[in-house]
Image 1 (cartoon, rainbow, N blue to C red):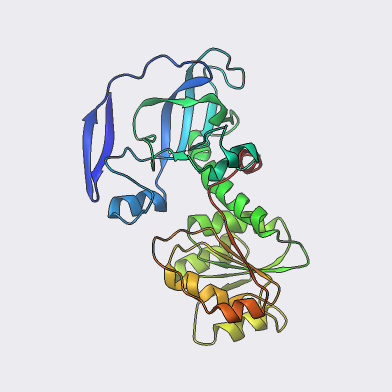
Image 2: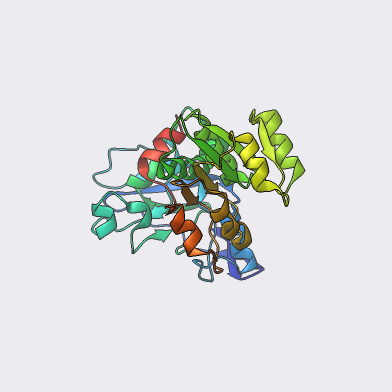
Length: 295
């Protein structure tokens, strides 16, 4: 069977692969119907994704069909349409045993550390499939993106009586916004792109869609009743933005990085310490986030 493989940065090649073997115990053979193109894939193509090794078959946002199942599999059956939780963890690892498989120290993410879905069929642990027969394959390919947003908001601990700033209105920022809206917290979004801001206003009903400026802190205080936001979620993956985000968090507030960069982040510790700020990273998503995101 044919597959598309990234041999090195900026160099794709069409390759011939052997047909996958029958699934073993606990495994499923899936047919790939849809593959989403993520910022991670673009960064891998450009050679800027710190976790990717080459050569690599990309693709982790997937809508798949179950073709066959191995011994002991009861969670899915042939013909099921599924989203894929692409974070292949070691169930015996310390993080996994503590309910954090998304950041398992031996994690192998499809399309990043190990080959992903830009191929017709492949074997996956059946526990990583989430059935969504009521959804189209296009919708199923979006579930992983939404799950990341769901997890980021859960990490933030955002409450209805708090305020939130989302930095970056790309796919991950919008996925985060979907779940921020469910908290009913007062929310603002900032982005450099006018088209993205217009989309937030017109399609996402965001009242405060802002462009950055020299007076941005004053803009935020104007939106949030004289205060800075309780929660800031940076979804840019841009080191300059991520560094600046420390200055936008209210005293006692939380800063959540859902974007990823391989560059250094800089901040003045005394300022963040004075505010008793909390810094959180949000990596991937948990199985429950996939269930919430496909509901």
